Length: 361
Image 1 (cartoon, rainbow, N blue to C red):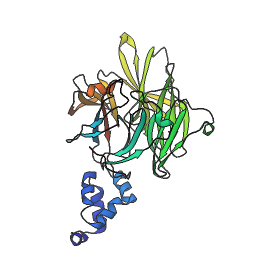
Image 2 (cartoon, rainbow, N blue to C red):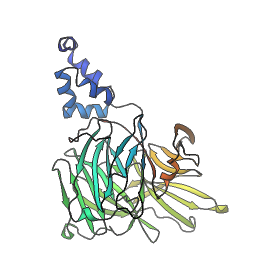
Image 3 (cartoon, helix red, strand yellow):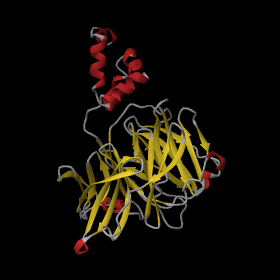
Image 4 (tube, rainbow, N blue to C red):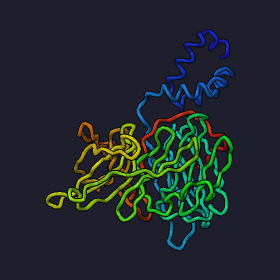
């Protein structure tokens, strides 16, 4: 086989492989030694990620909060593939960044989390530092973030709650726990954190929507400088928006955005999408009505689920709705914070290695 492959020019082989899906690439590593070495090189992995023009993959997971008297949550089950995968002790996903996700849960009152590449099935357990590992997770807890240091290509996870915070570095393979003296002023970790639709990572920063007395502010974390920063949210006119509910953050068409709902004329409820033009400067992009419940976001489309537990997408730009061809009875439960349900992601797969054992399922 090596002799047969050698008859092809190296540059042509390289271009062909760069256009193949991850599942095929994993098989091709067994073709010959040269292909194995090539596919594992960091430069090839990055080129493959950049040249990925295939439609996004759909990832749907089912989770169960467990009994109220039980300290064990989960398991989380991936249901968007023919063979379901179950991850014990994991309950939620944060992502995605370059095809990677952060999954987390709680076992025996201690936080458990791991990095996961669903395309390669690699996982890296992130052992939480004490005493942060003993912090509680309240049902849906969006106080995690996942991103990359753009200067070093180091993938990092960050967590905060109340007055504690820590960041994990894949390159260091360790957590850095923040101390009070690390901050010029204490970050607003004690404010309520709204959920994220899809991801809220962009250009080396992760963003959270914070609410206090119905006033929104934005907390960001820069993965390169490993620093938190608070910026202003949209300035809403109370006369125009008599009742506003801030739903959460999203990445909308490569811009950080906030999804709000408000009551206007005739007591009807409308959604607003506010896009951040620059830090602290916001523009209301669009207002629309949408009766089903929004569950995720990808590019310029909102993913929502109907009462009949069917997935649809609504393209805000074109005002077109499309049935996504997936039905699952518990989908409708994932749109609210409750005793279990489903989460939905659309993402680009990658060969990014995270170098630990494959998950059992």
